[in-house]
Length: 114
Length: 110
Image 1 (cartoon, each protein chain N blue to C red):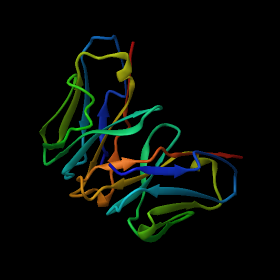
Image 2 (cartoon, each protein chain N blue to C red):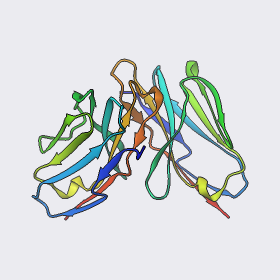
Image 3 (cartoon, chains in turn purple, green):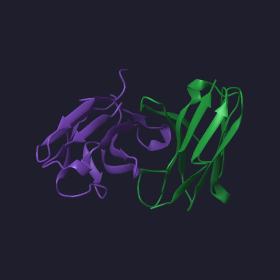
Image 4 (cartoon, rainbow over the protein chains, first blue to last red):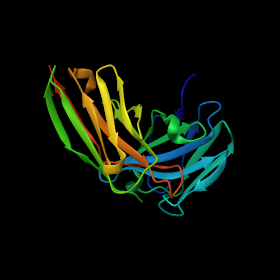
């Protein structure tokens, strides 16, 4: 298995532009999580899905952020419009049935908004 | 949500030394995991350990759920052990998401 695949690995964009981050979970995993990592706030859960349905989006910072999971093999996290304070590493993770089996994280997308 | 505190925040070791990392959590949990983030940023699951003791090579972990703490032991440290170690717990009252601690940054010098 190729693991959790995120793209792009790096993204540099100008303030105000739309940014879309992509994630392909491990086949068969029914949970998908989006995290953001910054020096100031550490690892924060943004949203998670179970069987493609959003379960908890209380971590999404504001309306500029949206996430979708149109099918079991693909999810997107969109920021529109982007701001410099959105600069961070965004991780996607997937797991089986429940997290007791352990998360598998993707390699992350390093986003820089200038 | 549950508060997760890790100590020490930073640790520098000579290669070959042993170390103990600690994770305290503020409430009952039904899931606790240790992760290692390597210097390239990749997060790797080390242990699923809501209670008891597990060992994997030079690493072992112990969780005392009744006292709300977990320990990660690293023996005979190697430079490849460098990185940040995170403890993460699941609050059984709020779903399946992990709450991460702030991590222990470990540097192993040759």
